[in-house]
Length: 392
Image 1 (tube, rainbow, N blue to C red):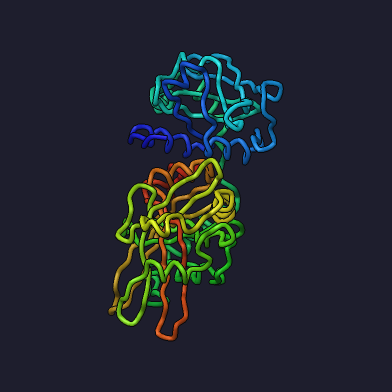
Image 2: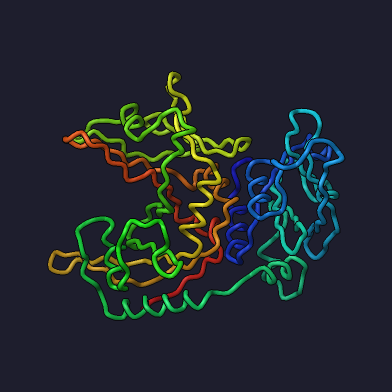
């Protein structure tokens, strides 16, 4: 799929803020002429994870075609449609999808949004439709009604945690526990009475806490996840370090960011293989090539496990008598990450991966990652809703 425009990204942010789970597809000129589209990896994942359809279990040929009701949205008008999901006899049965009437609303290389709600697909042209105007319109319209039905409300636990945060914030700047980048989070968890541990589970009754200094615009941590070594050419972090590491002081390390958009100075890049549903890290060294693999399902599950509901807490950092203090001031509340959009954001370079590997003087290899991170501007693309609360 092509790179999304800023306008298309803004529309997705607005939809995700309203807890709308969706996937995207880009019809080609040939596809529109032949009334056929490849069901890309992100589309297949969306269908499977939402228990709509599993192409892996579908037989080939017209007799195994599955049809599901659909509605196409245009400004103040809707048109009934039918979604056809099938695998042809030819070309190894590559998964296909089509929506009747799509050619009336889409041009080649437009981005089409696909929502599934109450047993029907809901389809609209993300590129052309003025989503913001329709949702803000005082006149009732089909798209606004749909999004209103899908939207949800914050839970009691979220309000409970919010009250606790406001109590912490009301006490003024809090002395940092340690002199480290991680101190902003550790200090807050201690103030809240939350045990600090390395568990993969969320921090407070199912809600993950992520704290950051307001003066920084760095990418935000999503989760750490090692590759599937059984599927990878390299079988350990030590092998990655040996192949791409460098000397820094007393340590031999590999601290770098890897993106799907460009190669880094080590020649590393990410790539999505939607056919086999994998995220692959690749080297430009011909003798190495693809060297580690993450199944997309594993990454989706980690995202859902870690960020089913998250408070992103902003703190102002000040120094008092030479010691850092934190005034926690604002929280951004997100929940129900849209896993199908995780793949899109990887592909767009909005979600990246950091290696944090080093071999110390005693020969021990330490790996703090790989850590998947998201650009601050990408939160509203991945997490609905995105609501902000002042703490002071």
